Length: 600
Image (cartoon, rainbow, N blue to C red; front, side):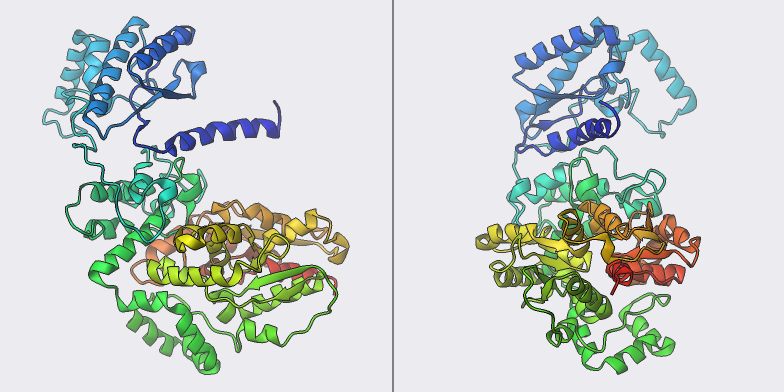
C-alpha cells in the first residue's frame, strides 16, 4: 500500500485500543504482560507458548503493535472484579515471567515495570543484580521518598487493586441512558490510563484543553474518569455523586467533547460531567449564576423585547461592569448583544419563489434566534439564493445551555419536545440544518440517550438528518446541485478555526471544503484545539485565566499574526466571541463568507 492507503492502515492500528476497550462485560483487556519483550526471532515461539498458557487459563487476549521489535502487546481478558479473576491475573504474570527467563527476554520493553511487574524483577534479572538495584536506591534515596516501591521493595502485584470485593456496583440510576456503555460506571472504567489526554498544543488535538493550559494531572480526562469511577464504586452515600472531590476535579472540564473521539476508549467525560452535576444539584442545589446561565434563553427573550435598552446596558463599560460584578463574570469580558428581532419573526415575513422541490428546515437555535440574528438571516438568504425553500419549523431551544451547566432534567424536557415536534417532518430529503454547532449537534449527540425510551428510535433517526449547514452544502456540491459559476472568481484568503464539536464529529473538513469552493478562495485550517471560551466557561471570573491560557496556546497568537486582508472564519458563537475579546479581531461564520462570494 502507498500514499493515502497507508494512512488507513495506521488509522486501523490507532483505533485498535479503543475498539477492545469498548467491548461489553466485566472481562476486560488488562495491562499485565503487554510490555514483555523477546528477540524478534524468538517471538513466534514465545507467542505460541503464551497462547498455550492462556488456553490453559481459559482466557482469550488481544494482540497488537510492535511485533517487529519483539514486543507484541498481548492483553489477556480478565475479570478483576472477582476473587477468581484476581488469582488468574497473578498466575498469568507468574507463568509469563518463566517464559521471559526461557527466552532471555525483558519484563518491560517499553513502558516500565512499576507496581505491576516490580515483584518479578529479581526473578528475571537474578537476585545478585537485584541486590545492586537495592544498593543504588539506598545510596540515592536512603529515606525512600522518590517514587517508592516501584522497582525495589515492590508489594505483591495483586494487592491494592481497584476492586477489593466482588460487589457489582453498576446499578446506578442516571438521567442519561448509558445502556450503550452498560452504565456510567462502565463508561468511566473504560479509561485505560494510556494518558492520551496529556497532549500539548505541540502534539495537537483538542483533548484535553484544561491540561494543556495547567499541565496538572488532576485536569486530565484520565483523572476525571478515575475519580468518578472511584466514588461510584466505593461511595457509601445514597447519592454517590454527592462528593466535593468530584466537583473539584470536574471544575475545569470545558465539555469540549474532545475525549469522545480522541480518547482511545471514547470516554465521554462531558456527558458524565453533565450527569454528575445534575445529581450534585439534586443533593446541594445550584447557585444563582449557574441557574442564570442555564436559563440564558429566557433572559435573551426578555432582552429582545427591549433590545435598545438591553444593548445599551451590555455595551456600557459602567453598566455592564455592575452586571458582571453582581453575576460573577470576568470584568475583561464583553457581554453578548441581542438582535432587534428574532430570526423566526424575521423569517415569517420573507417570501421565496415557489416551485422548487429542494426543501430544507432551518433550526433557529437559542444563540442564532436572539444573538446572532444577522448570521441566521444570512444563512436563510444563502439557502434561498441557491434555490432551496427554507422553513423554520416549530421547535424549542436545543437545551445546550442546560446541558452545559448540568441541568439534565430540564434539557430532557426540551429534547422530548423537539423530537416530538420534528420527527415526522425531518428526513434525508428534508433535513434539519443548523448554524451553531453546539445547538444542531445536540440532536445527534445527546438526544438519543436523553429522550424518553419511546422516543429514542425517533431521536436517532432525527439525529442522522440534523446537519450543520456547512455539511449540507458540501453534500449538495458533491451531488452537483451547487456550481462554482454561482460564486465569484475573485481571490480571498481565509483562516479557519473549527468548533470543538465540529472536531469531535469530524466536520471541520466539510467547512474547509465549503469555503474552498469559490474558485480562488484559499483556506488554511488553524491547528488549534479548543478556543477556551466553551460557552459560559470563559465568562466565569474564576475560569477566565484558564480560558485565556487555552486560547493563547494556538488560536489567539495565530489570529493576531494574520494580516487584515485574510478573513478569520469560525462557526461557533463562543469561538467568535473569544477571538473578539482575546485578539480584538472580527471573525465570520462560514455562511457569511460564502454569501458574500455569491454572485447575486
